[in-house]
Image 1 (cartoon, rainbow, N blue to C red):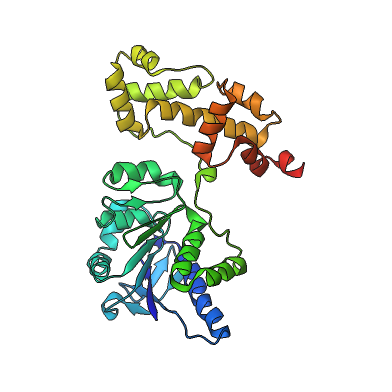
Image 2: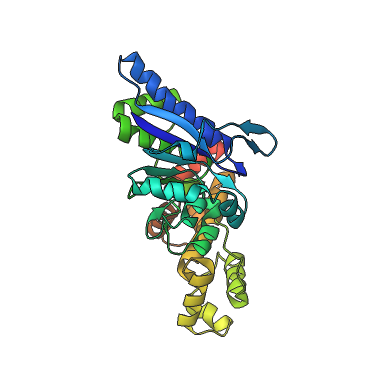
Length: 326
């Protein structure tokens, strides 16, 4: 039997992550029992305090404290909201226990922005990681030593799993269940809880917002110029000349400040505008393409799919109400 430790952190944490994980992992045992098989998981809520209040709305009582768990097979960390330094301080008692369990062979799964907490332990250094797309820029700044793949809905690297935003933790749960219990059980769980199995990208959900929480004023002005003139052809040389910077210096500073190259930033701004037009407008794909400054349909489709994970037509069909009705 696999021991599963669902952590109950101090502070504002996701009750949905906790309750959902507890329910779904135990449902695996129920399915196995119907087949006359032994339970696969022993699921416990594990804390560093006997009673934890969540924003005054809920009180969660852990089944056990970390000192009571000598060995576990899987540690699940729910999303924890707030400032990273405060979260690390409030939950510092978990860190040596997590590291020791991982060294002893336990796997670790983080949900959504819980990746910030795990990154703070150093266990994600040099490894792939996913997090909520809205927190990607902040994560890159705080943890440059971690390989953040912000388009992925989940990652697996050296026994550490991470998931993207919000309810994508359900996709990671199904993935883990498949590894532990097999494909057939995972399919039944996905159907029972109506989870879209095998979904691997959060790209269709990302709303691009340029990173501007930096102090490089020329780069900030360059970002604003791109956002206000995205329908025009903008080049790196043009921007460098406008803000009296050498091309290489411009590119270096832009990447450092925004976590995007100049070309990537221009593409993302154009595609974000195209997405909004496709969501709410009546124009066809070619008309939207011209509106955002593309003239080559193939280049537009390739860039659009690279950023969103969907073709322009698929995106319009998915998010435009009129297209959906049609």
